[in-house]
Image 1 (tube, rainbow, N blue to C red):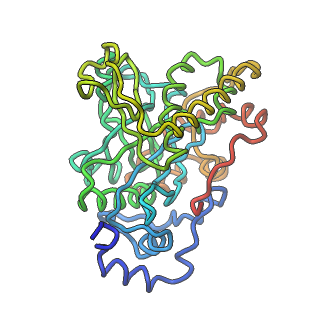
Image 2 (image 1 turned 45 degrees about the vertical axis):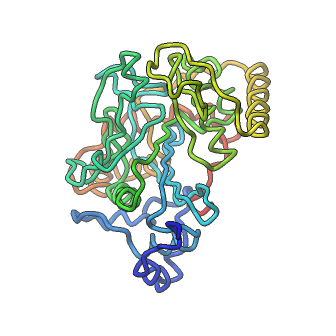
Length: 360
């Protein structure tokens, strides 16, 4: 029997008896007050009947593997789980209250940069007693970043609305995410993948940032992004030639030195997928050639989801911080958080790329 057939009976019973209203996903464009911001708790997070019902509705088991994607520009974190089809499906999208730095990878300690890249989180990287309620460590720097000499430590996904290189959500949001990933890790998943991106890696967004010094790096990230978008399978990540390589099998096994040239690769087992990836690359090339300039002129520091920015404007940083978290941490750089450095880009692109709702 597979993991789905072994779904815990108690979880099914709870999900079956959950009220119909609990099945309604929270839309990203909805008011943040709909997210239960007044229901702060210091208790260790557990899977709620509402979340179990949502998983059941989407054909997912609480024990099934999980994957996370993070998008800076959109200030969103997605939780994906394997469903009955054996592929990943979107469970829920969470608005982030704060991230710091700017678009681009983290390079050195103290640069306030939130990281970008591919990370893997194991059970020992979860912290149920974090000073920011609960958290998990992304594992920065990873093998590639370490080899490139990048420095920094303790880059987290955590609660509160304060960041100096981390991704910060509400206590309620990070608690729910923590419960989801903890269940998967305790049910047989050795580690879950986190994909951290500057933005949704569409050709349109890439073209809007064509002049950014990180474009070459982002093109590499887009290869992993495209693979997931096309297959809904977790990309296999290797490192060689000073970059990420995705879904490659190498003669002689996995490359050992991230800085050395990549060994010869074996033939791809899926020519049709390779062709589809090549088509996406061609579309990107065409978009980059047609795009104009792409300078972000209003950048201050990091970003904040528009829902929280609206609350910050209305209620001020002290009240927002109190509603977001019980840990009493102030909103980091609230004046910077009020600015939207990507406003002009979103206007140029017709409000940007369509963002999937929590129920998509």
